[in-house]
Image (tube, rainbow, N blue to C red; front, side):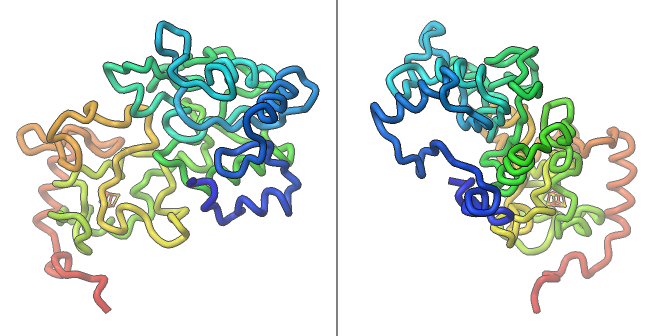
Length: 304
Ligand code: SF4
């Protein structure tokens, strides 16, 4: 559903401007039942070429490694993943579940869920560490819960136009162009972060969400405040803490009661600190910042 909201380029642009033929999609696919099975078999046998396999959702292996808990087109979905990934020129994992297992893979992981080439932060996953697609690339991870639609369409266009080799990936196989900066980069609350002025409730238009409401913007790699959602806004701009959903450890603290939307602290210091800052540095910085905080930082500066 996120994919269908893409704007730059849109899902329609993929077809009309870039000549991509969308073989199947849960909402757009025309083939059903026997027709779909026939098309999938044609792809597996090589009768029909498969340039890009975009997989969304975790690979379910339960019960007992059979994958029978998640059947698709007449057989376990995991078996289609095995066969289609063998013939695909490129494989893209869209969303946290496909990238690293996501919420279903959270302990105790009853569905034995796993990502395509990772399980949480550990490389390997369902296809194994050494998996390479027909074009010689590992799985390209476009995480997020959901992934931003334009991250998907821009990567698909790059692959479809033969620029797959130019996509530089980080250690977690995420395209660096999207995942080198932090969610905090471009957040409208950065001044409040700097002066340690805290928001105390969701939707408040002043204050930073890091100090009390558990925002993970300073330690999460995503362009959510550079490539805006619906080209309009972002969670943090709207007053909703970043949950760190583009990182393999998401959901953090295994969703233990009292850990969501609440900054976890130890003797007043957040347990998770902004990337690159140590505890002593944080204490010095935040003490000075609070002392230097100007009076306007407490005002609603977005009122016009
Ligand atoms: S709300 Fe979150 S992303 Fe924005 S400045 Fe505060 S910590 Fe950073």
